[in-house]
Amino acid sequence: KPEELVWAAGAFGGGLGQGDLCGFLTGGMMAIGFHAGSLSVERKEAKKLCRQLRKSYWQAWTSMAPLHCSEVLERREGDGACTRLGCLASARLQRLLEPTSKSLVTS
Image 1 (tube, rainbow, N blue to C red):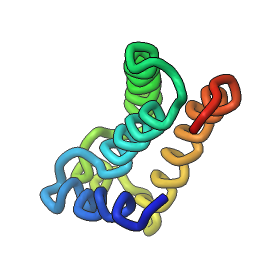
Image 2: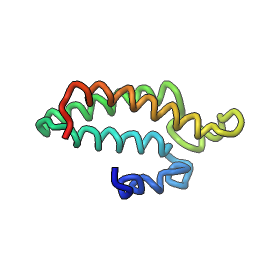
Image 3: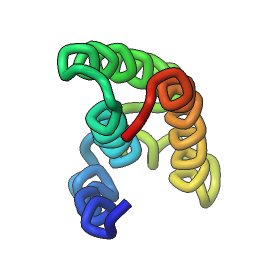
């Protein structure tokens, strides 16, 4: 993807620098939107898929981690808590997005 897309989430770290919603959560939601928008399907179908993926990612997230960076940092067990959480989040996104990439033709 273009470097500009990477920078679109550049300020998400540390819960927008305020200890608020985790950047891996909000960035994951952006990735879901980018993914749904890249599919070669009707807009209505893409929006429906986006809602389904968003719900699945939210449920997965809330079962594995707090919503806010400040809570993640309070609960962390040693250094690298955010790195581990980022790995978990990206693995979850990959599992969610891969089936739609394979079953629907992408542009």
